[in-house]
Amino acid sequence: MNAALVQFKPRKGDVDANLAAMRAVFEQLAAGEPDLIVFPEAALTGYFLEGGVYELALTAPEIARRLDAAWRAVAPDRACDVVTGFYENAAGTFHNSAIYVRCGEPGGARIVHVHRKMFLPTYGVFDEERFLTRGRRLSVFETAFGKAAILICEDAWHALMSTVAALKGARLLIVPSASPGRGLCGVDELESNTRWKAILSAAAAEHGVYVVYAGLTGFEGGKGMSGGTSAFSPRGDLLASAPPLDPCIVRLRLDPEEVDLARATIPLLGDLGAVLPDLWLDPEIPVMRRLEDNE
Amino acid sequence: MSALPVVDAPVDEPSLRINPALTASWLEAFLCDELVERRGIGRAIIGLSGGIDSALVAYLCARALGPENVYAIRLPYKSSSPSSLSDAQRIIDALGIHGETIEITDAVDGYLKHAPEADARRKGNVMARMRMLVLFDQSARRNALPVGTGNKTERLMGYFTWHADDTPPVNPIGDLFKTQVWALARYLGVPAEVVDKPPSADLEADQTDESDLGITYANADRILNLILLGYRDDAIVARGHDPDEVRLVRRRVDGTHWKRHLPTTALVSSTAINEFYLRPVDY
Image (tube, rainbow over all chains, first blue to last red; front, side):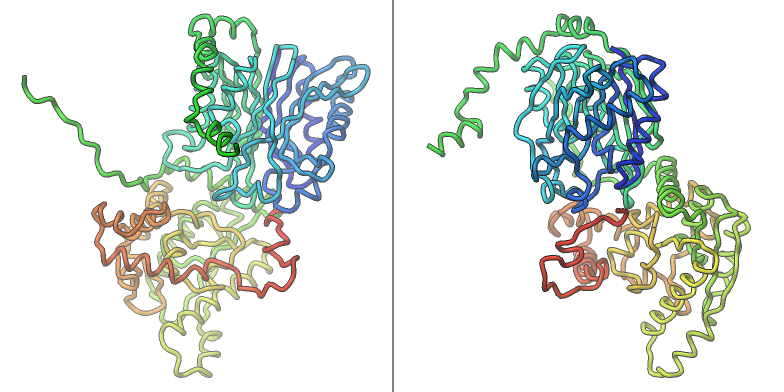
């Protein structure tokens, strides 16, 4: 599977302009026959909207239709999977979502999956849960590569999320993100970017999954979205990474055999599957205690 | 068996060290995005005092926008130190940016003759607000955006004139402590005469920031950093800081939260601006 990860700099609040920019990316990539193109979190609007979410959120079918039209305009004879983050209006409930849509098929856009961000950061500079409702389910879905899952930004900071995705069969983790860069003490990159790489690499290596990360870039009211678009092999190796602030594209080939080999060499995921019941059915862990309290 | 070697972890204090190359490139990108891309204004105007903060901002703007797009305005009052003027000229010459001097003495004294009892603090505030007025008018004249020069230390200590020094719509160094400003200025080649002189608001003769504040910037920055990270006073003292200095800094921070906000507005509806009606600055 040929994947392209787009480090994208949206125009704040301008969905039409951002879709036009995505179309330009499609045009640039089409000749290379991509199978998967990933845009970051909130790529259609920019990340910090506050109450503007209610003005700019779209439905998943509408996003799918418009992405399909943009792709079809540049590559009418070839299908491609596109992932992008967007603010979703789900019948008056608003989510920070990412859509996985198959574009360019004869029957029109096909929505493969919509992931609604589960961990909505609401601390410090972040205020998501003031405006948005969190998702309630982490699902995996079938792609041409195999099973995949989407984790949006803070979703990926919780090791349990990548663990659950891998246990449910994911071989590819797609991480659209919008991360305000911070920490100027880093050796050659922001400390927040270093932290991201450590998290993504660890998730990839522990579970034997590809992890692909597309980061928003550009400043939003003084907060610089730190890009950091990157890809990690199922062994946890950094395959490619983008510079922090410039829009750009990271391309790579995802090879299913790499997942098999990584898991065969270090079978941590298999080990976890064996031990999981002992861990999970432990009444001392908080989720079990809460269930008991409710009784 | 001989005693095993022991490795004791030091009492941790978060570092204020910065990577100056990384910091410079980040702040230059900020200036390009905020001025050129968001506002479509490719020119910056800076009140250049001769001190390190405005010098650093001039260097950042010149790197981000090109020296031909940076206007440095010197705004002396009759009591301003002549060395401030010459240090500002040093910056203008080094960068090749536009420079102009506009005396504020007539304007300030025109008001102060109606306020003969005004003490040094009031006079200083009048001068600071007059500089703001001139800077914004010159901004309109040149279609250049005023760029702020307040650093994080003075913002936290409340060591500035409200609605004067803090008025420019963008500020590249407002999240840098003073000691970080020094580090970045040295890296960018700000002349040693400007970097190494004692910081001064230059509102009165022989005034220095550190004597006004009652603490060195080096100590204030370390204490401020720990306060911002949530440490209690006793935990800060346990890291080797003087209890009186910790109290001083805490008092200044706690007494000036209002200076870091817009005016307080009486909320009477469920559509109050910035309370219920919430839109980001770049929306």
